[in-house]
Image (cartoon, rainbow, N blue to C red):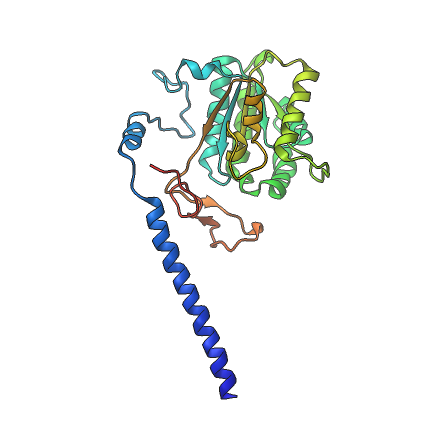
Length: 287
């Protein structure tokens, strides 16, 4: 019996030692990986700063952030890491800005055509019916992009409805859902499906002369392919087709991300973690 206890004790000691070594190596490599801030980048960010909250948009007097070339785009992308509340505010602000500045009214969302039609139904009703968002769209998101299924998302759509009611019919925002349908077994990547669905919508509805605004996960909004992927992002496919793409990619630093327990990952009681920012330890944008 003593021999058995010794063996078990030895195993536990080895496992503990491995865990400690792993943590030490992870910490050391993380410190090496992060390096130091690049002076030029920091100065650029200090100079090119625009603070945004739910009461401030891109249309205030004196705003001149993007430059003339930006507005020559055909499809404007905002790419997010899912789970950061502020991005819902940025999305709404940019949607309203492009609508006012360019008359952009076609809002491409990371949802399928069924959900796109329901959102258009929501926007088109004489009386605001938030049950469409809470009872239909939120349950869908909890299965597809559960980190978006929060109160900020609900408030955003309430605000989009209110804004839409102030516009003439020719400028009212319309939703385009281009993602794959749940349960779709066609052997095609999501980005391939997005491209095919977008092409079909543009052709069927004669939208060749229109501009578009799209809010997607960061990867789908990249204008170039990623070395580790065998499939080009949606934005890169549009660019290769000859469309002028403008992509704004959002990097969150020193931030907490919403990681719901339903995702199956061990998370704190408040369901917030700091591991997924762009300042390490799992990802890093140098500088």
